[in-house]
Image (cartoon, rainbow, N blue to C red; front, side, top):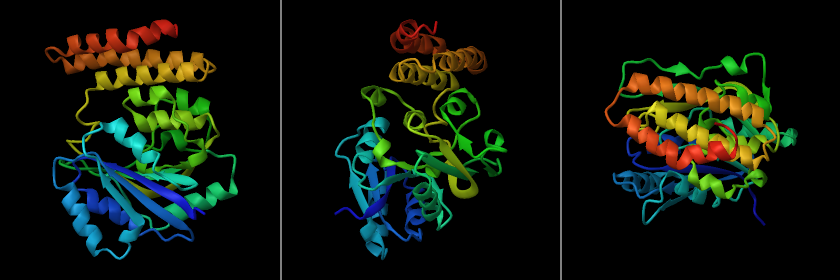
Length: 297
């Protein structure tokens, strides 16, 4: 009989500077239930594996950790999907290899809430943003969408342009992990997962800072142009529109129009030779067919 209540899912790639802190945040958890920690290393080109092996060899709780290294690079989504399906717990908590938890009762608090409120699909919490390689000071997550409200439904999540929370704040019900075929084709796995889970029940926000989200020059977000990111968001929302049988079509159309406006502004700001051609190629090959199909032109 499986006694694991929570599976902690971590993907990592090139996180040699951060990985120990990330694992430590999981191993300090004080829980009244059993957990497992699934770490999937996507064939990191640095010393991530050696650092993890050395750390676990010395840590008394290393038995909680299931670390594996892919024999080849599966890519962000391929690695994430395979890691998720290794999880055995009733709940899945997420933390990527460059983020970390700072509250030893984080999992206990989230599980206590979810066990007492079966109608919720996911709960999340506040977080600190830590800026690496810059003089910018650390700051808490933008709380604007959450002021005066702790419960969020699918309409809130789609239409609120500021609705975003770091991956390391999430805990959700594994029974609701039903990934469609299109999931492997998108790039923002955490956001798409949130959208899919929002169809299963509302989200609950805990106004406590229990994790740290690192923003550093080598992160995916920092190395991707805004215009490309917005194109990928249009693609993701178009897939999701079809997935929900266009039940939220008006909201999604309005959201995609905002992304299109943002793309135009980003192109003006970025002003890089060849970027417009790159955006045009991405738009014509991947996004425009979806917009035409879903009447979002």
